[in-house]
Amino acid sequence: MARKKRDVITAPAAAEGADDLQVLHPNLVAELNGRQVVVREYGFIEGLQLQAELQPFLDGLYEMAKGGTLVPLHEILALIGQHTDLVAHAMARAADVEPQEVLELKDQQQGQALLMKWWIANGPFFWRCVRDRIVGEREVAKRLAGQTSTPGSSGADTVTSSPSAG
Image 1 (spheres, rainbow, N blue to C red):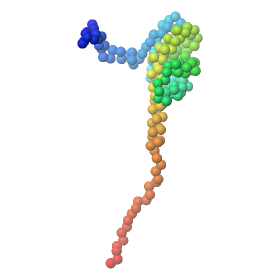
Image 2 (cartoon, rainbow, N blue to C red):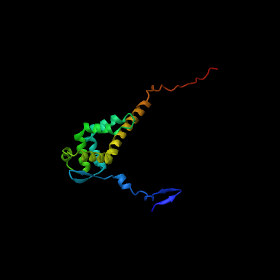
Image 3 (tube, rainbow, N blue to C red):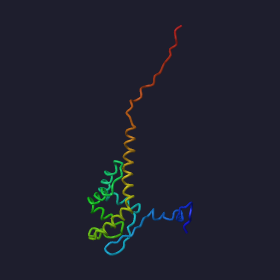
């Protein structure tokens, strides 16, 4: 039931953490060739396996992101277009369908919806890969820049006193 508070109507508060599962594992329904498929987020090990397979796509995202500015969606879509085979296989894996079914999809609307749902579910995975690479490179550069060449230490000065003749 909605309640009124100082002339503002607010919705009832959702139970804390009610959407945690959806945030942690977003499953989105898409239509593919007349049937519904679930587009899911990659699991941990699956993501590790996909990183090597998708490295050319990740390299492109990295080049876009290393400048530190927000990458526009149209640029990401252009990059996807340069790597359609890789992305189609990645989409198929997330939807648990055969890659050929994605590669042969004719319906533009279904294809676009599937692509967007795949990106919503798995885009954060790709950005984490890119961010980790950027952070790692910056850390290495920082450590290398912090190291300076220092001369070897010279022998210790020792003062020997000799008994004075007296």
